[in-house]
Length: 316
Image (cartoon, rainbow, N blue to C red; front, side, top):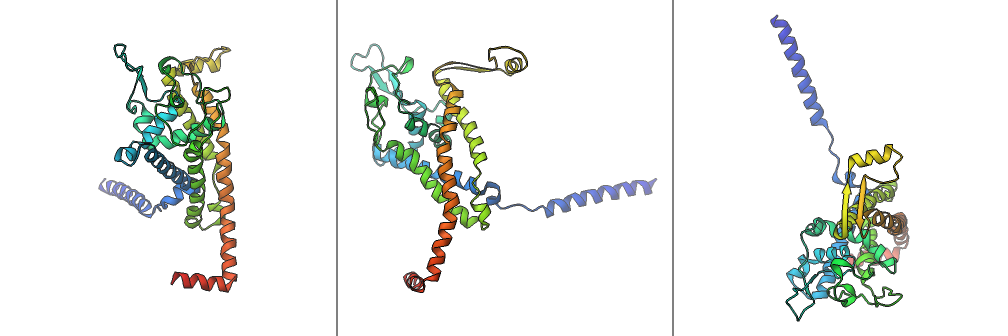
């Protein structure tokens, strides 16, 4: 009897040891292998976007700690309010001198309270849509935002934004959208391509910007940004049972996702998803071309002894 128990104990010990050996021999991949060239670009875009927000906010209000640390919240509020009197609250009826007050940056909404995380995503989803669609961002204020029109519907003048929103064709001249939307995309594409080439030695790897991952990520983030906009101007109700009923019956009503108000989350998601094919094309183009161009330049330098000598002399 004891022999049987000893054999069982030995088998259990051997199983434990084999499991431990497997755990010890498990090869942990470097962090770069998990994020890949696409993750490198995402990190580069995040930091580029935050940097431009801080620069523009300092240009707007001057050098201060608040200008730096409140920059993401300011731009998150600006874009999520769609340019509709962002930051205005209706004045007290007894206050005869003011029609509205300028409220502090709103931190009671998830994407504003966590603006250091979500502000770059908000601008990526809404930025191109607001800049390319001429009339977007400048409809006549309604309901909660129907106060006096001033400063292009923004509660303060925004850096490098010009154009008359009250005109028949308002236009969006100035460098605001170029600075806040395009510069981070261009910078992140170049930085991402440079860093990816040095992290991933295989040419097939460092040029492999995963378009599908970015498209799926943009679709998900587009929905959440649209949902935040929808909740600001209407009501949203999601019902799992209603979705099942809609899918498996011949009902013409969508009872799974019910929205009433302005800025339908689905419309925001789909519109931004299609428009953001533009930056995806730009980033993919830069990733594909940067490696061969750098290699070509280095070969020309190596083949040219004079240039190489000048380089060595400059370094010393």
